Image 1 (cartoon, rainbow, N blue to C red):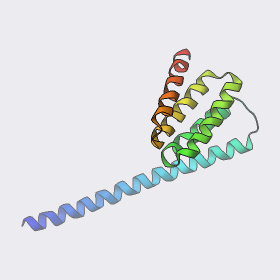
Image 2 (image 1 turned 90 degrees about the horizontal axis):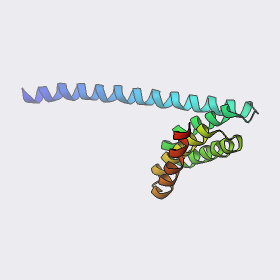
Image 3 (image 1 turned 45 degrees about the horizontal axis):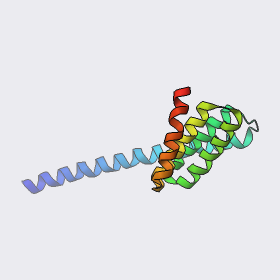
Image 4 (image 1 turned 60 degrees about the horizontal axis):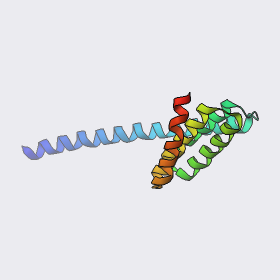
Amino acid sequence: MQFKFLIINNKRMHRLIILLLLIVNSATADAQINVDSLKDLVHRDKRNDTTLVIRLVLISIPYNFNNPDSGIYFGNQALQLARKLNYVRGEAHAYNSLQHAYLILGNYSQSMDCALESRPLFSRT
């Protein structure tokens, strides 16, 4: 009787795991579609304004977890443009994104530096 109970729970557990994997997979696919759409907008729109800063930060965030080097690349692009435009909020968000990428890479001192840079910028906005 106990063995039958384990088999039923095992089947239920397998179904639950499959369901969770499908949910995670679809969320990852949606995130990739959004990143691809944002990258397409960045390449098509040639204006260097605050909208581009926001798009670059939004592109960098998903990369921070899967490919931190790319997250740093887009975060630095956002940071440079935000500084050029004197867009304080964009600069703060760029530093925040960079902080997460460096944290994932294990570069804790650089991550802390970015976090310390972003804090006063967030308080100014």
